[in-house]
Image (cartoon, rainbow, N blue to C red; front, side, top):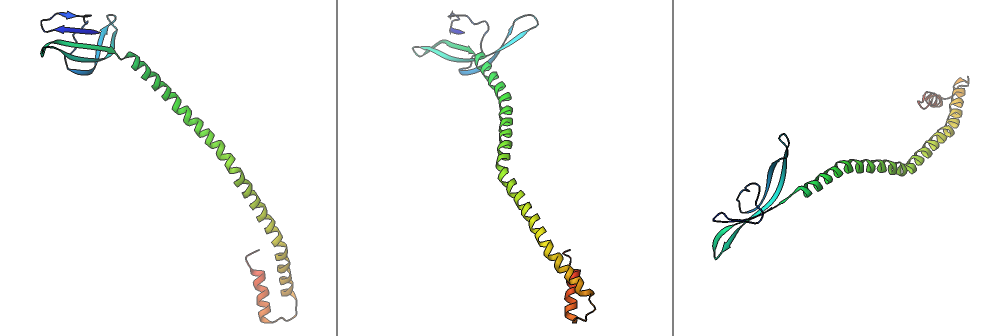
Length: 164
């Protein structure tokens, strides 16, 4: 919409459908148009108002406005993309992290299983000699041979030890 008005009221160019506010510089304004008796449509415009001077005398103002509808449509598409794209992207990142974390944990899991096997094997291997020592200590306590007091105390300590 282009409007050039003179101080005496003559208008050149396309006449505006409504009087735009006269404020110098750039402005963003909202206009309402009556499409039907019930429906009102609003439109955002970006307008600039410039004074027109001739021989340092103000002869009118130039107002140029352009609709912001294409920009608003692009913003709406961008908002939709972000509203859908960000959660989907975060979900994919989470799933990928979970998968890669599982792969990274495999060597640790194998190492833990080897440690458990070693502990079970070592425990089994140590039980046999300990059982032999314990049975010999019990037999030593049962014999009627008079052993020295210190030797008997040592055998009793072996039998009473909590490592059974």
